[in-house]
Length: 173
Image (cartoon, rainbow, N blue to C red; front, side):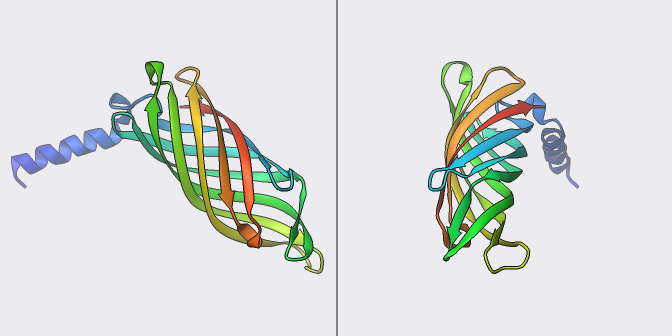
């Protein structure tokens, strides 16, 4: 291996294992709580999320997050049967632009896979449906440790469109 290749490999390893040295305000591991309300049927979902983000170039954030939540209230008419939504999980990719005074704000878009469990009349036990979820929102950092986000999502699990307004409180590690 040439000295130039070895130096490039060493620099790549240093960047990979020491991201905090080059991290922006929205970079790193985070987790939090999130709640959403479906606009169509006013069902409410509460849950938690965990994710990781990085700034590959200044003011541009990319990342991935996963969440799990439970529908605490609300039913839905799914193909002629009343459905009670249960647990829901997703894995989502996020891309955002940092802006504002002291770079404390981010507008973002998201796309991901979701799966929701539900029970319908005439079905023994529960079943599940999955779909692609699209979303957008804005996040504000109060400090290096704490941020708040508000956004909206769209998906069509079980053949029924869901438009959700959501809010979350995040802790950055």
